[in-house]
Image (cartoon, rainbow, N blue to C red; front, side, top):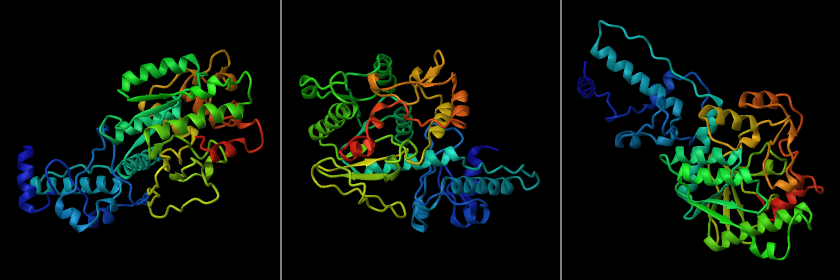
Length: 370
């Protein structure tokens, strides 16, 4: 039987919901499902994934129920349900082997939520940038951005260059810009470097503030960005665990961590006054293991410094004078995931600015640090 036959048959029977893709009807989805519902508002995603295609709703379906009410899993179930009905009508004498309903995995849910946050940010703000450190989290963000926006990154990526970057990181930056077709903005706090601010003469917290935080403030003022998409995660640090998905900063670039807006039912803070901006955190719910599993799933390119060399590897990458490797023999992603399951060493144990003084990270973040 041809595809045209199925289209005509389904049109006759009134069970076709538009050419190209099926849409789940609420009654079918709710009758067939047997799983817990993901967060409301999550959109069907997966550009480039052959097993999960974006579903388009018809005008009649949009009028009947909001598209945001359906989870990706409900739409897949509804699609299978309609396909099975068409088969029974076309071949009543020939039973069709039931098609299974694949359940979303933990990584699917994280990806779904992250892409939803990307799209919310793109819709809410006029001028967005994405800070990019070339680390594993930043490269996962680039991958998610490409999935969210049809294979390209529609906003510039921002590298705050302290002039103390590892040479391998700079080489990776040049390669990745060409590979992904990125619009790159590089910012150096030339005024601080002219004053002699550096790790040779100042403590790590002072240098981090001058060469990273102040440089970020300068580029925000120059380009008038009202939204930043960052790659922070709650499990990295106790201070970052206090963050929101949409985290506002005032005109002085300060973070009021004691007075943050609630985020009920997928409603986020997007209103900003002149000079203010909001930081959007698509990876907030991810863990270090989640990041590595996602990198493994999609074979995402990352710097090779994360893998063991001579019994040591880097878990977190920053400025070379204050970033130290950890003892490890993990030379593959499988080894790293296995190591993370048993290690008691924190991810940022090798970052000196985190441990220079009590609550150093909280003080830096309150002033605008990532």
